[in-house]
Length: 205
Image (cartoon, rainbow, N blue to C red; front, side, top):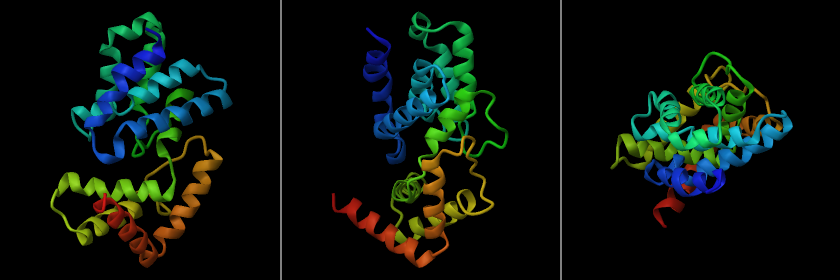
């Protein structure tokens, strides 16, 4: 079995049990962007692949410390030792621990910066969808009004000017996405209209 086959068959399926914003499509997207950034920054692509694939596995334990648990899951996976040295595994663990958007310190290595940047995925529709429906994990029977107000406050706290989200590599894609998202956040009526569309499309499926 190759490393790619192991990731595809044994690791990515674990994401199917997570909330709608962190399922297999999210992991694949972070992997794809991480590989692009790894090439741009002359980093090891196989390491970037694994870091991205494991970065959210700790959600199976809890959300608050999922970045720590994800690193622990990577270090406990004996299969990875056939492809990586202990030093590489420790570097990958550090990168996974450093990927959270709420982290106040810069990532310790380029690999942490890569997965953090790839994980941001600042595409307004995707960001708003994830924020809107994550509320259902807290309140499974919540109505649209509650979900919207929660999502709006989250957008202010995380993505608005002065929010806690940091971009460590300042990729052009995320910079453009952040600009577009902030324009939406600054117009609550517009944001509500977009969220209503997302909500209606989801419940009609």
